Length: 376
Image (cartoon, rainbow, N blue to C red):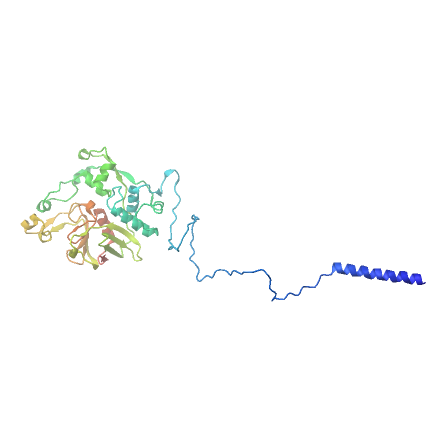
């Protein structure tokens, strides 16, 4: 009996020990109570996000530019990405040289003056106008930003066939005012002069384009190479025009200040003959005649001897060319000239001179009452 009791007691002790061991293996120990004030030997640094005072402007680009190191924030320039280039050298395509740039500018009625293939002052100003229009950096050069956007839809050169009517127009220009007044017209003197003016080019450049042509012995049917630089027909009238005396430019705008035309112009040789301020168009005349007034030409010996006015017939070699846009100040106007290669100089008696092709186009944009702002 006593032995049985000892075995039972031993089994109970063993069972209790086994239960305690199993519980220690399966229960999760209680969480350790950590005080928030406990210091450690680690330094924890929290870096807050940078403060943004205002949202920067979003710039949308069609292609990712290369990284550029910038020390200060540059102004945001909105650039126009060039359209894709036609394959196999077709058209449209970017211009390749200054001559092609001049033709492309002319087709947008941004005149670089007489086409000559030279990056002269009037071409540089025309490139600046195009760059401003396109939101490009203003350099006045055919640079890597400008060249892809200045494009030709068709070749820059074409051909001109000399006709019988071209020869019928020619008439030697007499040297004196009296002699000019006795002519039936003041038309072109030579085919070279006619071809150059019809293609917006200098006579010297036309000769360089056609080195084998003998201009003194041309015949009907002769074919010559010329720039293809015709202006598009205007779709609207101008809202106002601005003449800048220092720049010697005339620009025409629509009602929302979009540029319609840019032309080089000549201004008065004497400062006191240069009107400044607001004027307006008073009269429009295409292919006008010209009244020679000796009082306007005191430097002319013939004018002093004549002592009377003369009426000169119309024509491209008329002193006011093929167009007259009279202003509301007596004796002042905007007109063409028989010497387009001299446009841009300070040589007139007060009027504003344009190349004949530019004066003819300006006539189409103008109307009586059109505001004209003349700036210093």
